Image (tube, rainbow, N blue to C red; front, top):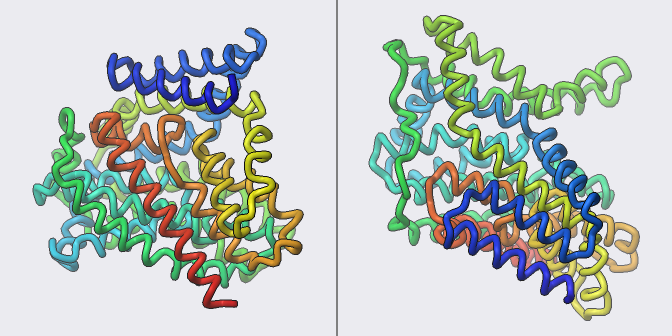
Length: 438
């Protein structure tokens, strides 16, 4: 069997196990990872090691980050900060222009933060708006999460596009400005798409993040924004310091240390423990109880993410990247479209937007001069391709499904289509910009 046939079989089985038999995604992903290894001809011991490595690498990179983010998100909710922020968004924008406020918040959070961190920070704000104003959850979530995805893929200094900027020796300021222009049609498309999703059914009850603790003293708006978006401000601060101080031997290691997502979130959590906890009259014991509840709510998400890492590692060790490149090597396609296409294919196969982007960058960087293409636009083309078709092997897919309690089918119809829509709109924006700049 060809690798595409095997991959199609694995995805079909995964969908059948989770959607039809209602088996836990954690168990289904593990079974499919092992089956994929067998079908790809990997030795049995190598399959075991790949599964262990995939789970370890996946959780090792995000465990602290997501845990701290879940704790911070729960504290933001329980303290009333999410309610304060959502009230201000509603008061400023009104329900008629609510999506503008949601998009702005998503971009603000998304530009400097890794996607998973931004996701867990936005959840309390989304749920607070849903409960207080009786709005459809998916309708509220899609514009904000679309903006988060756009920032993740197109806007440096976010780590992913910033890495591509360095790889292609592009200009970060120009890439950022071009990225903003390309983002506009993608954001408009996502907002219009969200209006078609109001009737999607929630299977169960969303976490009610408007049920604040017994402390009647709500934090003020400044404290709420400062504490909820503290990771954003910390990362922006380190970026500004780097701009002014350069790569100083004295300060650079310290800034790099703070920029690590796990350290960043830990610092933010410690500060928020005071600003939203102790300062608001909570005891340390009650704050720790809130943190324990926050972790309990995402325990199954951790297991699912870990199992998706196992499947991803099996695909990586099966050398699936090398298998897809010959399919595109001799195609007469514009370099920007080809960059998007290869990135999207790797994204579909491996699930990771970052891996997809870096894989495509490794292919195109050596021949960028020969292709005679604007490096800033190649960054954006690859960035847009890296978020295409999020599905069963992507952590974002499972996080969306778990938090919003929707079926596999409705996750495809909402989350996957949203990611694909903004990816395609991003490519079209890049191609239009390419014609203008020529």
